[in-house]
Image 1 (cartoon, rainbow, N blue to C red):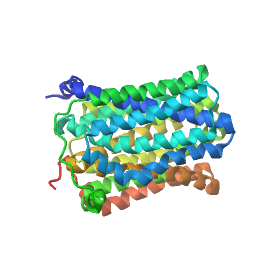
Image 2: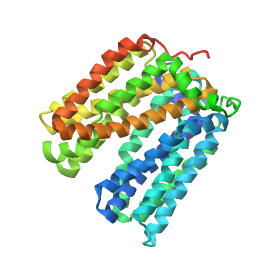
Image 3: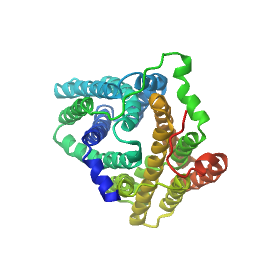
Image 4: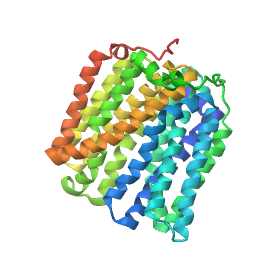
Length: 409
């Protein structure tokens, strides 16, 4: 079957199309709630510190519950777990819609509902990420992951734009639309048919709780992929410093800031569309390390960009390279992990991803305060390249990986 036929076959697969809707609706809802919660918090308090608290209270459940959420994803029907979590998120955001409409919204309530949403996402993500192999055949999984990531990245671009329009009309309306999107995602998720049965439940004990860590530690290819992604985001992330570039280095204002924020997502969409039609099938280890090296080099180019156009293009390359590494990592984790353990492994993966994003933001801000913005971004890109060189020597199994082949465990 050629690439075009394979893509057509995938898009004619009803359960996968419904799964795509769930990914898009949930991603747009996430973007809307982040925009609306942040906007309302700043309107109510005028405090950037409180904006940071919103991110913190959503991160705490991910860190505190990842052992439990992974086990839940492996013990129960992942469709039901994801739909239940999305329903909880919809309920929390509906509370914000009602209280905003009647004028009773408070900063404390915003933080409380943000915590509930964070808890919902802590349960949603391992189940949503690990259910795809139960929906599509193994040979179609890399292409399906690329398509799902393309849909999610489209939501990252479209979500803030839609949120800005809705906020201009009414913050309460923004919250209401967000709740509706999560509710429809939950309803559709329950109707997704699976082609592969879920594994039998394992008993709950300390061994099974920590088995995700144990499996990752033993499987060097998976450990290498997760570790490489962790340090690339931790050291190379530039998102937190984009307002500085838009206001001081390239004085383009809010429109320029929006363009810089959207550029990585646009690059990721292009890369995902290419991978959907032409998935990487050979020398996947080399491709993984190469994409992270390009991520680091493009970050250095962004730091040294002489003008706004080149900076925007560099960020698009950053997004494209990041998407390639994400697709390879997720494919490795999906295919190398037995179905009965995918939830726990993805819970650990999600915890590391969330940690790297949060600490990466802190690292970027601290380095910029100490060294200056441009040197901090340049150092981050060079450090990412250094990590690639070190990881290639440490994680030889990943570097030499040729094809996606499930590990027999």
